[in-house]
Length: 178
Image (cartoon, rainbow, N blue to C red; front, side):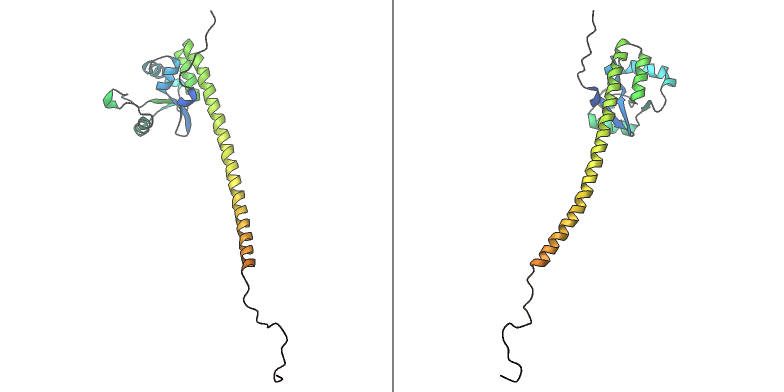
């Protein structure tokens, strides 16, 4: 029987966050993608701590957890929410999590996760290029604005009427002959 491709309800890219200047995915989202409970994912990670150095995974601080809770509107601790701040997995940590779970779905979904991180990296690179071009255009406009303002000032000076001429027009008799 041929395998059917997995349909994702929510694109993986929307689950990738930027925390501590790194692109990460939270343990709850990763567990959902891999088809396991958060508890099972975290158990496997804790059993294989040597595979998860700090650049693969980190636990959110209480303040980061609170801010994130406010942003994504998850339930509070008082209403049955999590007791501990979630873990955040970098791209490499998400792949390593798939290997420690060692389920067919986790391995299959790890491909989606890697591709999502790669697409995010590409989008960020394009955004940097776009920002650089906008800055260059802004600098050019500033110099053009200055040049245009100088031209307008010169035209205004030319348009100012000169004061009355001190020299009289017409024939005048020399002094004393008139």
